[in-house]
Image (cartoon, rainbow, N blue to C red; front, side, top):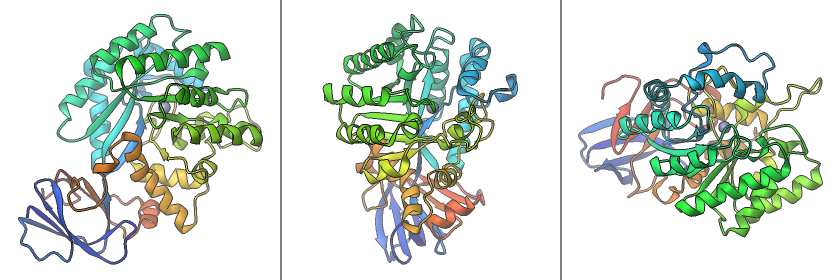
Length: 407
Ligand SMILES: [Zn+2]
């Protein structure tokens, strides 16, 4: 046996168990007597499969110091503030920043990420090339899915559609979208049609930014849900942000949630960014700007959350720590009862695994990959309360990060 973790508290299970690891996989769980090359005494600490960030923008991370301040604080100003910096991106610059955040994520226990990468006529394919280079250099340390994301719209930014097709050929894994950013509802429909056309052509899944606005008239989630069913794409589409869903009248929101359920769309809320970029026109009360998390969960829809931004024009904070984002999610979605707090922890683990389509190879079970995180807290609730700095991260059976750096 290569590694033995003694007396750990596996998330949502009772008591303390030993976890034996061999050849990168979990080989035994229970009271393990076998000898191991390396032994870690968990002492009742919480352990589970690696954390997953299903929504981050690695091409934009860590550029805040190069930008003028976002005076309005809005999404629109953030997008426009980045234009000049985006023109100056180089592959090396994007790669370096992306890697720094990927490394931070790993030390915090995140071994899988899905990043959207801007594809538009301002930065061309440089953001993609930078993130592809980062992925290549980090491929033994973290798994990364890349979404070709038309941040500036498709119809309103002629040339983007061709660039997106090129991005798919160059190595992007999923097609992104941002239909609400088009100039009208009919252009938004055209945008969604183009996204599905590209996805169909390349045989890939879709991960779109949908209705990232407080505007109750922004109704593109319904378009995406209808199109998903029409194209037989059920279970293959993720919709992120969907802030406007919270601004809709309750009866319309109910109808859209039913369609999202029927289309089996995965939902990702991004509370840290949306708490600061939404509601900027409100006086009081100021809306939270996040989607209807509780109602979506109640409807049986798969919901996760993402870091979204790390120190860019949208959000000046962030440290690629899913436990920190979990704490924000619990606050903003008011998930505070013991079972709800467990749900928050599931959102960044099991639910996110489902979004990435890796649920069969995820979880603490014999035969599954030994991609594990242990934190210096006894339960998920305590882990979210404290987001403790002391973490032990195991990837493919090897200790890749630990507080004592003895690996
Ligand atoms: Zn985003």
